[in-house]
Image 1 (tube, protein in one colour):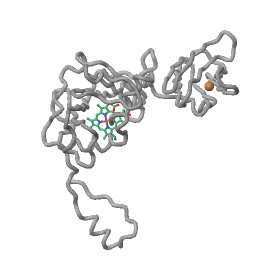
Image 2 (cartoon, helix red, strand yellow; image 1 turned 180 degrees about the vertical axis):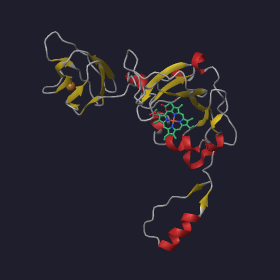
Image 3 (cartoon, helix red, strand yellow; image 1 turned 180 degrees about the horizontal axis):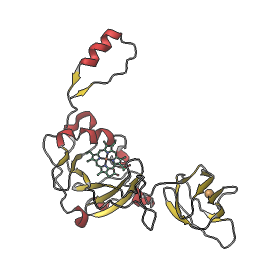
Image 4 (cartoon, helix red, strand yellow; image 1 turned 90 degrees about the vertical axis):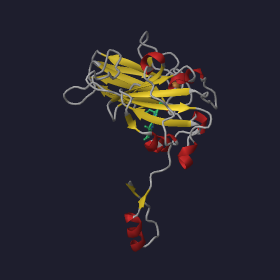
Length: 269
Ligand SMILES: [Cu+2]
């Protein structure tokens, strides 16, 4: 049972009080589990993308079954019936201060002492109707623990549908599955390229740090060392990320050679 939240607007204080104490029922959701526990997802399914969630300090690995991996990017992509997407949420290995300990590629690592939660969504013909106003196409959702018990029951999975409505039908109600098309690595982002600008234009890091750039623009850019013969990222299309490791103290000036006056700097301390 959840207390109803209302925007007060123009209603009177007395009416607001009445509404506040009124309770509402949970939004509609499927009564039975039509998704099914994906017991062997780690071996039977393919990794679509790995996303490091800095706020939750989690490694999120998204797997797709053989139907779901078939989709190709175009303006309006649709997962075939029988598609199952699994997102494994795993606590990131952390140091004593709670900072994620990065691997050799600058990525979060799974904490071997932790157990994951397994979020699953399945698409079949006619699925999803029980969600009523929160329906997201023909997908149904459930979350499990590794032993197959429920983290989120079918009855409570309206919360999944409600949030996935923030995606849209064009992306078939998924969020980051396009990372695979655009080669976004899912590493936490330190700097972006946006509207023909490096944001921020100057970064200060300790030596040994990883810096991930994400092209959050609509066109290609590159990252080329201002010193002749230095590193060159090659063309980075929209949505792509690239990670560098800075070991030597000093100033590294770089630019985009495709656009005049696009410059940035990393200062290694
Ligand atoms: Cu550029």
